Length: 206
Image 1 (cartoon, one colour):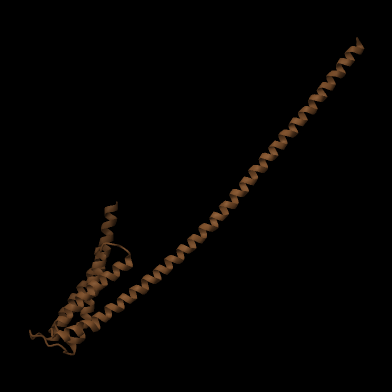
Image 2 (cartoon, rainbow, N blue to C red):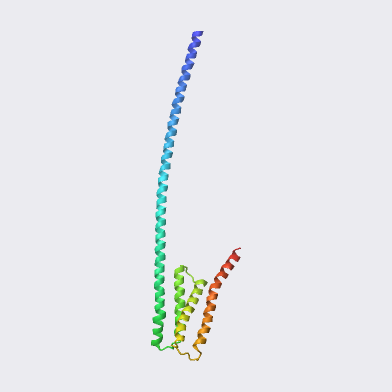
């Protein structure tokens, strides 16, 4: 009996040893599978990281190109605006007086002509620089102010040196004084209406 029990015990030990070896093999295989999965995931993460780096570099290049385009566009807008202002100056200082002289129109009409040309010219220039399609009240207000100032700057020296004789017989001093008051009122209204508009917008937004 003792010999049989010993054989059975040895057999059990052998079976347990074999099971232990099998378990170790399975554990090793699982570890290998896990390592392969981890390596695959790592490779995918590295590829995704490289792709994200390329996309980031691409986005930076596109941003830099966009900034350069915007700067170039702003420079182009300013150059075009300066050309338009120069053209407007030529119209006011050369073309309008020349046409009035050649057509034999009374020289008093030079002020109205300069005012009209300056008003529409400044309105177009301001609208071009703002990039908006419809004309807004701010652009019209600027055009009116610049037009009146331009007429005033042309009016004062002509009247002061009596280059034009007005048929009404009014003195140059009285006309210049009244016109100066008008210009002062326009300038005050121009700078005072903007804060009022901002205040009204803030009150309406609350």
